Figure 1: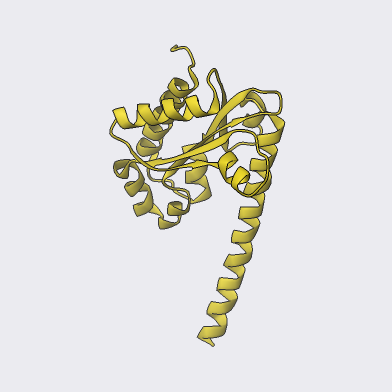
Figure 2: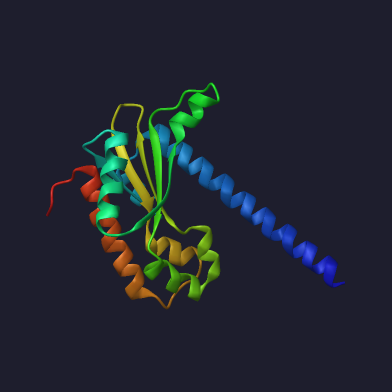
Length: 176
């Protein structure tokens, strides 16, 4: 009986995960092709998107430099356009930077380990069909909501402020 219950539970989780992955893929595809701006993405709720004054590569390089300067570990850099070219496909410039700070991520994982599905943090820079370059990430409060984390407001505020400053710098945005 336990085996059947576990299998049903796993199957149910797998269906939810597949749906979540499919929804995320559709959202990302829509963002990459539509050229949404920060104000129109606000309606989507979870993403923070800004226009960059730099190329995709320059935006990600500026973000990497800002992260390294602050001692934040870069885990990986993914060039989606290069991957597409390697598969014989075309894709506008699109690069993802994955990075993390265990001093911020660990307390969130102590509250709910499932946030590890969304950590380390990811920032995507992409070129829209009309040539604009955008930079975006999932808002820390959205991640907390997705994983029912309600006891880490200070950590989330720190992450939010840091991501805003880092992405503004990477985008070449003027300082307020």
